[in-house]
Each structure stands twice: as C-alpha cells, then as structure tokens.
Image (cartoon, rainbow, N blue to C red; front, side, top):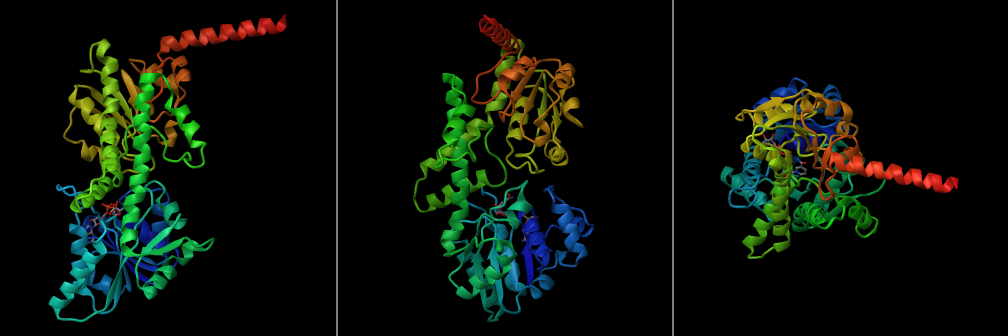
Length: 469
Ligand SMILES: NC(=O)c1ccc[n+]([C@@H]2O[C@H](COP(=O)([O-])OP(=O)(O)OC[C@H]3O[C@@H](n4cnc5c(N)ncnc54)[C@H](O)[C@@H]3O)[C@@H](O)[C@H]2O)c1
C-alpha cells in the first residue's frame, strides 16, 4: 500500500520504517529541511536501537523515501498518517497547532479520496477538529472530495520503539466506518500474524485510551516515589516493598520502581493535557494532579540529597559532582523533561562543578546546556569520576550496571555515590568504600558498612565454632 507519514520524529520515523519493513511503500515527510536532508544522506537524526539498519535496508529496497514536498507526497499516498508533536501549551492544553497545519496542508493538496490517520497523542475531539479543518479548506478550494479521519494512537516506548511497533501489545483504531476499519486491519495485518491485537472502537475512546494509559503508568511511578519518601523516614526499604506488592498478580512488577521522577516527551505533557481537557468540561482530576505534584517534588530530590550530604562537609559550592546518565531513560538520546537535567541545573545553581557523561545523549545535552559554565564533558565513567567529590547515577544505562567501583573510587576525591535508580546493593556499596545514598532505602556509610561486615564475619566465625563443637 502507498502510505505517507507526516512528521519524521521518534514516532513518525519508526512508524514509516516499520511499515516499509513489512512491504508497504512509504514516504516520510517533514517540514524540517535539515532533518530530511540528513535522512536523505543515509544518516539518522535520532538514536533508537536497530533503527539505523532498518532505515538503510528499506531505503536501499526503494520502499522508504524522504521528502519535504506535500503535493507529490499527498498525490501518491492513499493513507496519510499524522505523527507531529503535540506539546503542552502555556494554557495547560495540548497545543494542536502542528496538527491543524498538517490538516490544512493535506486538504490544500488532496485531489482524490484519502484516509487521514492520527498517531499523535491528542485530546478527545481532535479527529473531529481535523475533519472540520479539512472540510473547510476543501470548501474554500470549491472542490468536493471524500475523506475519512481515523484515530490510531501510538504506544511505542523510546529505546524499544522498533520492537514495540513490530510486536505491539495492541493496535487501537478509532473509527465508525467499517470500510476504513478493514483498510486499517490490512495495513497492520503483517504485525498481527501470531494473534489478532487490533481493537476497533469509537474515535473518542481511542483518543482517550492513550492519555489513560500514560496517566495510569505515571500514577504507579508517583505512588512508589511517595512510598519511597516514607521509607526514608520509617526505615523500610522500598525495593523490598516493591517485591512484596509486585508478587500480587493484581498489581504485577511493571512500573513499580522508585526513582528520580518521570520525564520524557510524553508522561508530563500528557498528564497536563488530560487535566487541561477535563478542566475545560469543569471536571476536576485531583488524582492526576497529585501524580504531577509528587513527580515535581521527586525531580528536586537528588539535588537536595546531594546538597544535604555536603552540608556538614563545607557545603556544595565548589564541590565536583560526576553525573552518569543525561537522557530521560536508557537507550535514547531524548532529554525532554529529563530528571537528570533538573538535577544538573540545581547543582550548578548551588555552585557545584559538574562532570557529565551519557552513552548517547552527549550531543543533545551539549546543545541544551551550552549556556552553563562549570561543566566538563567526559568520555566515559572513569573520566567522570576523576577528581569528583561524589558520583550520581541518573539514567540506568545497562553499561552502568557493572561499574568498576574500585577504579572509580581510586579516581575520586570523595566517597559519595548517589543512586537515583536503586541499581546497586546498599551494603555492598558501603563495603566497597562508598557512602551510598539511594531512594527509599537506608543510607549506608562506608564506615558503618565496614563495622556491619566485621560483625557479620564475627557472627559467622561464632556459628562455625559452635557447629564444630
Ligand atoms: N516519543 C514517544 O515516545 C511517543 C510515543 C507515543 C506517542 N507519541 C506522540 O507522538 C507525537 C509525535 O511525537 P514525537 O516524539 O515523534 O515528536 P518529535 O518532536 O520527535 O517529531 C515531530 C516531528 O513533526 C514535524 N512536524 C511538525 N509540524 C509539521 C508539519 N506541519 N508537517 C510535517 N512535519 C511536521 C517536526 O518537524 C518533527 O520532526 C506526539 O503527539 C507524541 O505525544 C510520542
């Protein structure tokens, strides 16, 4: 099938490439000329595992094309996916400016029947808005052309986007037109060979499902972060509580990790947009608001923990902190709403010197933090630790799971390790010589761990001699 994908960002490029991989003939269109030029030169403007090989393969097979030219792209495509950004507006509502522009551009160029499929995350009513804008533009042109508008929200996760698109948990289609539903079924049939996961529903429910999914996931995160705060006061360990509740099948283990607060291009904006739409109906959503409040507080937490550690050590001003991980989560170069950026900005404001490292997000971070002095960009973990009074793990990249701690400690000036992702064993970190401060778990100081491990070995020796007798 001939398919057009409008917007060539994280969602659009993955959508277009995966559709081409399954044999469709795909044009990816963007108004960003630089992005299209990069893609035409066989380079990928974003980092997403396995994407580059797949793009190259499909370009070489002549199934995937890039353009900025609306007229030719619309002329040759029966189905037009919209995958443009829907940022949050200053008024707390989803900003549909880009969607509106796309709708008008399509209508200005359409010569015959087209199916417009919206993949962007949008409030209920957007498909209707797109329909109205297209119809108004066609009326202005004085032409009578039939079209359908479908809602098809995207659920892929950055860092696992290809896998998510190729093997989706579900594909949601919002339409009340059975012919269009059948067309969408055909497009997605190669992705459903093992079993059917396509759900057809009304447009409003499809549009709301995406916000509902993100709001539910964000709620679980804020719930755990709120509990983690209590654990820090009452001596419980959030990791043990997580295992305890996750074992209940009704709860499950996913999305139950305490951390530095959620970021990314979706959760924060989608919660705000959901609440914004509710407000326009005069409907209050105090639960969603609380999820946002908890998250905002959580994002301040790591900088607060670091500052409070140095309170008794001459203060944070002039101290050097090494930061491991800048992206909002592993396997992406996306920094949007990253907790790492919040921590970095707060540490800099308090006079700290920073040594920063991320496996793939360095270029984006350099652009974003270009106005700040007191930043040293590092090539790896060891360079980040060199001369640091403390290290802070902000993003749980796999390569940080087994760090060479003796080497890092030998390069550091201080001994503090702040772990915003609870990646390591507290007592082991203490035994390795770190003051280890994580989230929702007891703090372990190097000296205390040494005493604890001495007591442990004394107990073991006593048990051994008792057994011998
Ligand atoms: N990023 C994710 O993980 C993710 C996951 C699911 C859903 N979504 C949703 O998908 C949508 C797109 O997200 P994204 O992260 O891919 O955004 P993005 O910012 O990475 O990409 C959007 C692209 O659209 C282009 N664009 C804007 N106006 C245009 C126009 N008039 N014509 C052609 N191109 C235009 C921009 O130049 C940009 O390249 C958003 O609504 C987002 O909420 C994102």
